[in-house]
Length: 369
Ligand SMILES: *Cc1c(COP(=O)(O)O)cnc(C)c1O
Image (cartoon, rainbow, N blue to C red; front, side):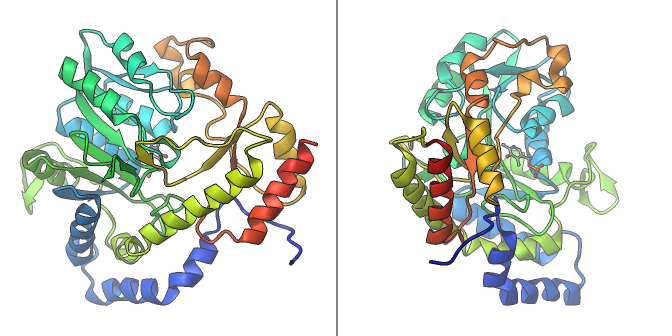
């Protein structure tokens, strides 16, 4: 066995090596063609991605944040509206809600699944509630049965935040098809990542799709004819070419992540808490999160052996400075807060080798001896 000295948290270079020729050819084709704004590569990728997810429409936009924001705007969510989301999410979910002028309302998570607790959603509903933004966190679907039941009962809009869940399924169907719309991010380190920023919205609703195409492109259907106050948030054509190549590999990469997760669990489940895959969902392990009382000591010990880790997320959204005006306090979401002090994300990417997984598991075990 080779002696390792480093395991990165993600290794984009390893992935790049495996697809270099194909991606470079696709990118050069865009350069030669010169249709840099929207154009053929964007249309092709949108069609391919919609087919992959099983959604009727896919609309490419500038970022994952913009995808959530524009989906909310397309449905008219704005000032005076409350939008319920999880306290344990990346800040983009929250900033998309505030960007449209609505008020984020946080709720706690399910202890095992790490995703929004449907019972907590019910308890947070007021006469101002307009929408729910459930987040398929870490690559595992939320309890969609529970979330959709609450939404139907109260006639609420559902915009799935699927930024960590490209290809994840719920009862055999891909997430991103259950809500009114779903938002994806193609930030480079996501399961499907561009070589820069990118985002996309899926929806089965024709009118919403049409509105989103206007919103992302200055509100224009025809050049210099502006029907609504849109913005400039288009999926970059060069990025669409990159993503079009990478989409063909996504299922294989997600399967590799699941194999790595199983290998981690087999080695670690007696010494730390390992992720629980829900029976109704296929987890694609955007991140692999363990829990231990001695999180900081384990993290330090791994760093000393050259192993990079992450914490997703160290400070829950309701305790972020940017949310201070919302009036939440420590103690409001005990499940989320307790997990924040215990969670640790181990290296996870498709190209991870068995030797690297061994090395990481040994380091965790040694740290906890
Ligand atoms: C990455 C991410 C986003 C935002 O995506 P960007 O492309 O970085 O704007 C939104 N929500 C979640 C849960 C994410 O992980």
